Image 1 (cartoon, helix red, strand yellow):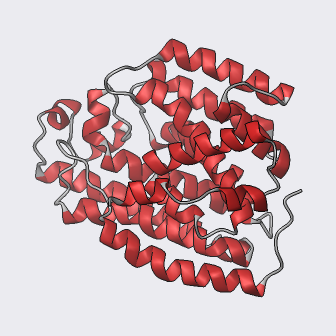
Image 2: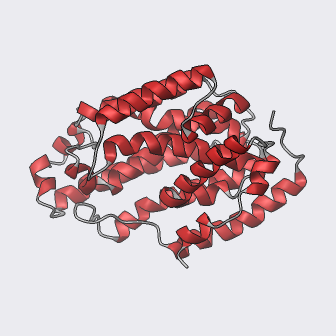
Image 3: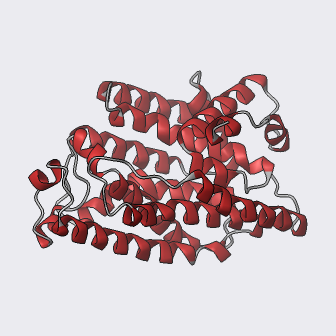
Length: 315
């Protein structure tokens, strides 16, 4: 049985019970989010399993919210920019109102209220998603970072109350982690993003290494393209180093989750190198055996951390 199917079949009722989610409609909404996460985000799903059960549904809700919005503009076969605008407007109105008939918005709103997540983070995230409708290139890394604030860094900040933040210093590490995850995606998905008409790698970086968009579209990894990708990988590893400083800044129960996410998502960079930077015509991924090698010991640490710490309050 494939790992995705095994993940989908894991019982979720215990986590919902632990989180104090008893309303049948709300439980169904969170289950929709869990399945979105299991189907589309194996790394995040595996990482969430390292958390105490009462925190896992909130990861599923936040992931599903971001994935739902992203799919409107990232689908290679059926992009729907108008749908993103309509869904985003409805999401913000429903989050303000505190109720929604959309299961993903319903669960995300409940998570936001339960954990005290700032509404503005959702506003900034959806604004970044709208940028993908008509912004296809970024002149400088600073320009790209402005986009990544909404597309990724705010997700890192939303996750802080899930992980149990211990110090305000964790803010900057969460921002760096969001950027590191996003840059890993950009490096892995150069070829796919070209099909969407986008080049996320900064134009100033392409110029630095003498690479043009036309070169990328040829699909041949030249020495110059290797140098460009190696530069972006080094930059991204520096972000992971900053993000890693945040591990001791969250509660012990949250650290195995964070460490697992960093190890697995950071592993994308090693897979790109192992594939000789062949990201123009194929998509690399972290093998299941590597996921298992990371997740197994992390789960042992997670169980130990839960035994040593008092159960988190969910209200």
